[in-house]
Length: 305
Image (cartoon, rainbow, N blue to C red; front, side):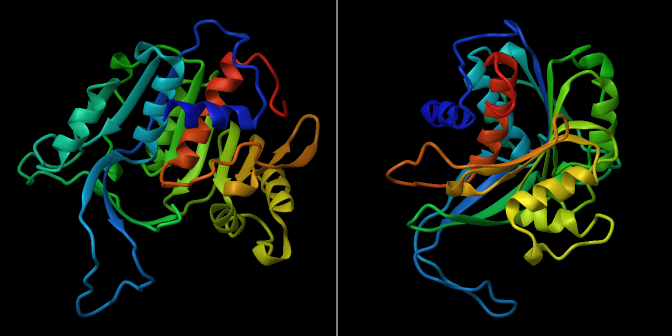
């Protein structure tokens, strides 16, 4: 797993042995999900009525964009005290034990969902992930407690950080508060999750896959047809209509496209590392975002390099 994470950093050809910031700190505010993995041994559609029986057994694994990114950063930094993860779930719900075990291995601030005291325990976020023999994955995600974040307790969080990682699996208000708490941090905002307009606040990196880029375009002025633009043009258009310094559109095994504001550039970058066997692509984008933050702060080179 750690080799895979370091390979994502190598995609950007950063020299990780050279450190420009010897003691950077990271704050990840985001989701925690219990992922239910189901093997997809044949093609099928999820029925709206009736039942569907599939072969195989079920595995429960702690995931979610926020938790995946925090765990990846803790592995890369090799020092969990430099990574603070802020998430929200109800420890009284039976499914939450899977998450409690996972967050105990990192420095986490677990917030109680904002619900009335008399309410029954709220389930955590749940992702039902279908995996194919080729390693491709698709998922249905139930938000659960991820959309019930209370106000962030600033007194229990680090007073500053070098990089802030955010995602659209938590409320917009939570992301806005996090950005106001850490205005000087490198901010990596993941557009994956709930379909929303891009943040109005300035961010360093706005990241998304191509499907998320297509949805993002529909929130922008003039609403260009996604089919009329290639991935590089999509990244450039989104850059021109948001407050991001850089827009990254990931393309799976084909690499990524990067559009930057200063100097104004738009580049296609092929994937330099391709495994011989793909086991499971779940969380690959989250690992990439963590590696991007780590490489920017501890790689000693610029964005394009």
